[in-house]
View (tube, rainbow, N blue to C red):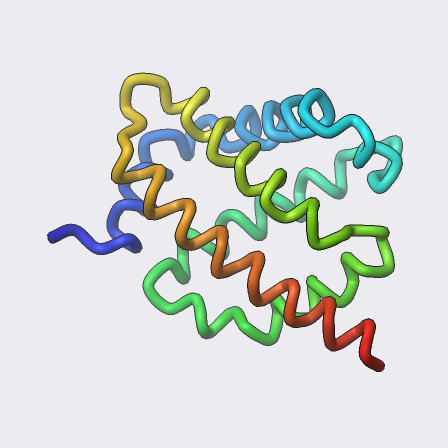
Length: 138
């Protein structure tokens, strides 16, 4: 049986040459799907796009040991509270990322890839939400 980490890496390898396109399409799709989140982001998205690409790259790199990212993800969750992120935004972001990866990968995208990415993104979101809760409790 192929591990989620292997599925994530294999699927990302198939689209890695289009990483910038993925990030651009992600934000296009996000703002089309949830226009109410647009004000949470800067007008100039250059730095934001770099941050997201870096975060996605970290998930791919650490797919088999996401627990190593716990501290960084909790800190990110805390920061996102300051930006106005709400718990309801997390599943939307996950679904838009999955849709965007599928869109860019085309026929190479499989239900197995989707499942592995969904599980990883849910774990990332849960850890970020723990950081957000820590921030709100402080």
